[in-house]
Image 1: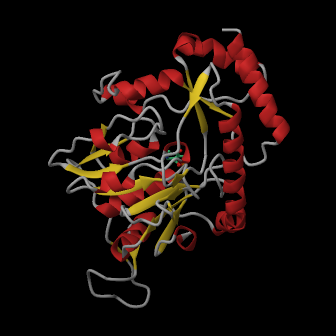
Image 2: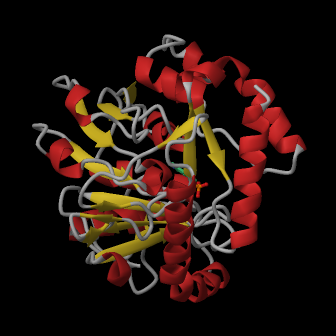
Image 3: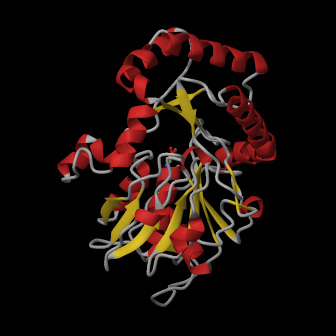
Amino acid sequence: MAKYCGSKYAVAFNSGTSALHGAYFALGLKKGDEMITSPNTFVASSNAGLYLGANVRFGDIELETGNIDASKIETSENTKLITPVHYSGNPVDLKELSEIDNVKIIEDGAHALGAVYDGKKIGSLKYSEMAMFSFHPVKHITTGEGGIIVTNDEEYYERLQLFRSHGITKNNLVNESHGDWYYEMQELGFNYRITDIQCALGLSQLKKLDSFVKARRRIASIYNEIFEDNPYFDVTIEKEGRKSAYHLYPILLKDKFIKSKKEIFAKLRANGLGVQVHYIPVYKQPYYQKLGFKMDLCPVCEEFYKRELSIPMYPTLSDEDIEFVKETLFEVFGDF
Ligand SMILES: *Cc1c(COP(=O)(O)O)cnc(C)c1O
C-alpha cells in the first residue's frame, strides 16, 4: 500500500475506524484538543476523535463537491487537527487546507483509494501527516474488514504499531531489559491487529485496484454524459487537477424535487434501483445531539443532505445496467 500510494510506511489495522483512532493517537490528539472534520461523512471520522477525549467541531461543505470548504474553516488556538474526507472519492483541496496555520492534517481517504490530486495519488502525503484507507467490503478493495494508515514519518509509524498492539513493544525500552523475554507496555493501546488471512485477500485485491478504479471512472464518465442538462438533478464536479476514485456517484435533486425526496427514494428502490443517501450530517445523530450540537449546524451540508442521492456505482456495472439506471431515474422523476 505504501508503494501504491507513494508513501514511506503503511500500518494495517483491523478496520478503517481503528486505523483512524491509531492515527489520531499517533499525532498526539488528546483531551482538550480540538479537531475539525466534515459533517458529510460516516460517523467514524469524528468518533475516533471522541475516543481520545478531543473536542470535535464540524466545518461546512461545498455544495458542488460535498467536501469540506477550506475557505470557511475557522480554527482556534486549541485546534490541532483537521481531518478532511475525500467525499465520494473526489479529492479535497489539500493545498488550501495546508495553508491554515498550526494545524496538522490527517486524510480520511476511505472513499479515495486510487484518486489523484495534483498528479499524485491520495496517500502520497504532500500536504498531510497521514492518510487512512478502509478495506470494508463496500470500499474499493476489501479484506472483509480492515484499514490502513500511510505515513512518511518514522515516529508516527512506530506509534501506530504500538497502538495497534496493546501499547506493547520490545524496542526503545523505558526500563532495563530483564532478558530476551522482556517486553514493555508503554502506552494504553488496543488489539487492533489485522490477520494474515485478511492480508492475503488484501494483497490479491490490490493487484486489481487499478482496474477497479478505471472501471468506476469509465462508468462515471458515461453517467456524466447521459445526465448532462437533465431536468431532474445535478451531478457533483471534479475540480481541475483532480481525479475522483468514484466510491460513490452522488446526484443532487433540483429544487422542485426536494420535497418529494422520500417518495422518490422509495419508488426508486421499489423499481429495483439500489439508491442510498450519503450522508445524514453527523451532528444530527442523537449521540452528537447529546453533546450539544445544533440540529442544523452547517447550512450547506443541510442543503446537500436535502438533495443528495447516491446511484449505483461499482466496477461490474454493465452498459445495460447503466441504461437501466438512467431509464428508471428518468421514469420515476418524471412522475413528480
Ligand atoms: C468506511 C468509512 C470509514 C470507516 O471504515 P471502516 O473500515 O468501516 O471502519 C471511515 N470514514 C469514511 C468516510 C468511510 O466511508
